[in-house]
Length: 138
Image (tube, rainbow, N blue to C red; front, side, top):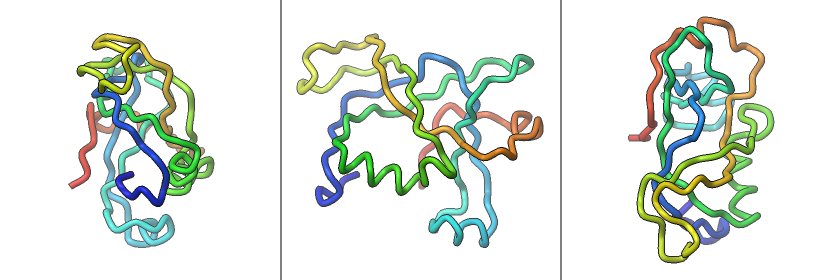
């Protein structure tokens, strides 16, 4: 997102999703990593629904405004809509927004889009794994 040749991305604020979702980080095999073109074998998976028998999991991260060029780059990176599906949702700003967004303040609810895992192999075992609140790539 830092390469200006990919388009524009402006940081808005730290944020959290307004609804709970399971976020897991999983080791993937060499073959899968090669298939999706990544070097890091620990991959985050944001699952599309919270199971009723688990405590809520509030996912935190950063909110950016991106132009259509950057959105296309991110869609390619996330392999939208094959591996991940970019989906509208809402988040709540947890930090002080950038001065470039004067209509927003800490605590504002904002429409946004996130990438949910989009494969049909979501067995109950996926939802039994430990949830994390944020994913920091090392």
